[in-house]
Length: 630
Image (tube, rainbow, N blue to C red):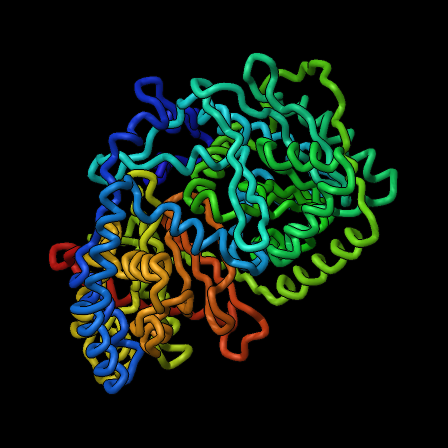
C-alpha cells in the first residue's frame, strides 16, 4: 500500500503527499512483464485445505461423505481436470484472469448495484470537510482536482510501483483500469471497455461526465499541457451545471438504467442506440470519460448513512458501470460508488488516501492560484428517448430502490487500541480483527460462520485475489473456550495464539494462490469448457455449507492502515459484509446486512465487535511481548 503504514503525523505537519506517492526512479508499470506467472496449485494440497475448511460447518456424517467424495475426485475426474488445467496454464501467464473476471463479475445477470459494486465515504468528513450547507460545488472542485492529480500520476507513470513487505514487486495492472473505464451490458455476458492510455501509449480521453438532477454534462478537465484544471476552474464549471439544473425541471435520469438486471439494461441500451445516432455519441462520451461525478441532492446524516447512500441511495445521478463515480452530496459530504469488475477496492483506497492527505495538507481550502482561464462551458448530453425507455427508467429505479432500501450499513470506531498496541504484542492487526469479528459472530449467533477474507495475489502477473477461508477449527475451539466461564486466562490466550498462528499461515499460503477456492473454480470451469457434467464435489452439501458457490456468511476484507475504507453488500441474505481499517490508535469496521433478514443486524453486529475488541484488549494485557509469537 502506498505509504499506508508510515503516516503517523498530525494534520499540522503533513509533508507533500507526492513525496510518498511518486517517483522518477522507476515507472508505474515497468515491472509487470517480469512478475512471475500465476502458479498452478497442487491438487492434493488444495483438497486437503478444502476438507480442513469444511470441518467447522458440517456434521460428522456430512464430513465422512465429503471426505469420500474428495478422495474419489482426487483420484478420478479431479485428476483428469487438473491435468487439463495444467495444460491450459502452460500457455498462459495468468490462467485465472479471464475466468475470474467472467465468473465473478461479467456473467452475473443480477444488477451490479447494490450487489457487486463497492463504495464508501470521503474520509475528509472527519476533519476539514464536515457537513456544511452551501459547500457542495466548492468541495467537489477541490476533491476532483486532487483525483485528477492522481490520474495524472498514473498517466505519466510516476505513481510508485507497490511492493510487499519483503520488497517483492506487486502487479500494478489494476491501476491502469481505475479511470477511463466502463462496463458494457450484454444479454448473456458483459464486457469491459478500457480507454485509458499512459503518455507513452498515446492519447487518452480527458473529459469528465457530471450527473445533476437527472441530467448529464461533460467538459474537458485536463488542459493542453496535460495538467488538471485548478479547483477554482473546476468550480466555475460545476457551478454552471448546478445553476442550470436548479433553474429548470429535472432530467430523465437515464443512468438509472444501469441499475437494472443486466439483460434488461442490455436491451434498453440497444434500443437507445437504434433511436438516434446522438445516443451513440453520448454513450461513448460517458463510457470513455475519465470519471463520473455526481452532484447529489441528498444529505447524509453521518458516516454510516454516507455508506448507505453511496452504495444504495437515490440512483438518479449515477452510472453504475463506470469504474469510478465520485459523489458530492448537497451538504458537502463525499462518497464513491465503483464497479468491482475492473479492479479491487485497494486501488480506490490508494487514490482516496492521496486525496485525503492533500486535503489535510491544505486544511480543506484551495491554496493555489485563484486566476482562472476561459474554457468552453459544459455540454449537455441530451438523449433521444421514447416511452419504452421512460418506462425502463422507472422500472430500473424501482428495482434498485427495492434492493437498496433493504441494505443496512453501520460504521463504528473502536478507540481502545490499534496497530501500535497490536504490533507491540507482535500480533498482526488483520488477524486480531478477524478473530474478534468471528468471536462476535459466534457469541451472537451461537454457531461459526463460513468466512471469505480477501487475500491479495498481486505478487503474480496481473493477479488479483484468493479466498482465505478464515473460519478454522482452531478459531472455533478458541471461541468455545472464550465462552467457558471455567476456562483460565492462560488457556484463552494459548488458544487465541493458536488460532492466530493458523490464520497467519493460511494468509501466507493464500497470497501464493494456495487457498482452495480459485483452484476449485478452475477445475469446475475446465469441466464446463470440456462439456463435462459438474463433478459431485460441487453438488455436495458441504460445498455450500462451507461458503462455496458464493455462500459465505461473512464476506470480509482488511483494507489497510489508512483513513480510507469501503464496503460491499453481504453475499447471502442472512450474512454480513465486514470491512475494516486499522489506524495507529483505533480499529474501524463497517458492517453491511440485509434488513429483510430475520437473523442479522448490522448495528448489533458492530456493537458486538466493539465488545469483543475490548474483551480481547483485556486478554492481551496478560501477555508479555516476549511470550508472544506471530
